[in-house]
Image (tube, rainbow, N blue to C red; front, side, top):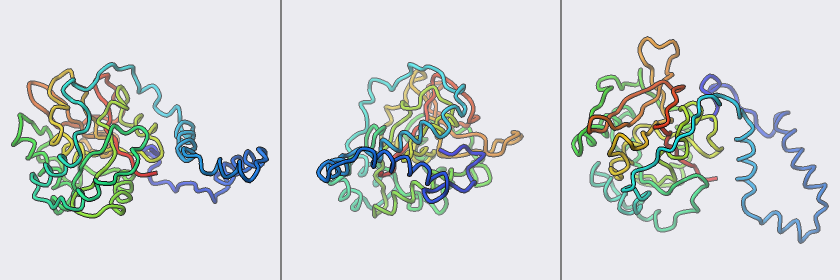
Amino acid sequence: MVPMSNALAPSVTARDSKGLKFVSVIEAAYNKARLSEKEAQCVNDAPGLAELVGKFITENRLPNQFASEEVRSTYDYPKKHKGPKGIEDQIKALAKIFGLDPSHALEYAKNLPQLPNGAEGWFAIPRWEKVAKTYNEAIERMLKVIASMRKFTNYREGQLGPDRLRQSQRTIEMLNKIGETQQGDILIIAGQLGLRHRGRSVRRARVVFQTNEFGFGAFAVGCMLLTHPERLEKYEDLFIDCAGEEYDYPGDAVRFGHAPCFHFRGGRVGFVTGWVGGTGVGYGSSSGFAPQ
């Protein structure tokens, strides 16, 4: 992800001078190979080129940005968590909880595309617009549902208005892209629940996201915990950073320099926020993946 300090800067495209230089390298390599017509067809039909180029860009765009904010971690998911549950069961559960129409999502689930690289599986996540009038109200409603189903503390209760909590621009754009390809109240999104970025600060995770990857926000992660409560049940479980949101902590020198997190302490799940540069072995950012 583009670092937050550069989030509003215009992006370079393949038609700009730097983009043209990158494309010219690929063009030169292709010409140098002197492929026959049959060989060219084989190369063109071979899968994985977009993923290969995307990975190269990700690893070389800002490889050292916040590199010191990454520590070795052996924290893992609890043994009870066997990965994403059946997508149909997730859809039906969330439809019942929030009073949503599951029909379009159930139909889409019958023919899912190939799972993107880096994802653990498919997760059902409601469109927040179907849950509340505003995104922040949708988060509040979701947190109240969690509180009704298990021991839970919202440490930012009354402090989650739009002046304090907002989605990252990258997450908004990626969710809109996914939403354009699906109909109905519930989206089906490829994702992972933190293990991929364990030991990394939130802003380090954002830097190393692959080109189609984006941070999940509190609403998405909370809904995933509703369908996968076993994911977070002990203090020893990997806590979940919500890298898709930015939180403005009062008195902080940097506005919106914090991010939400779900943790487990004192026998209960807690919703808190923390500085995006904080590094801990027991934390990992959850993320989603848009189609490539």
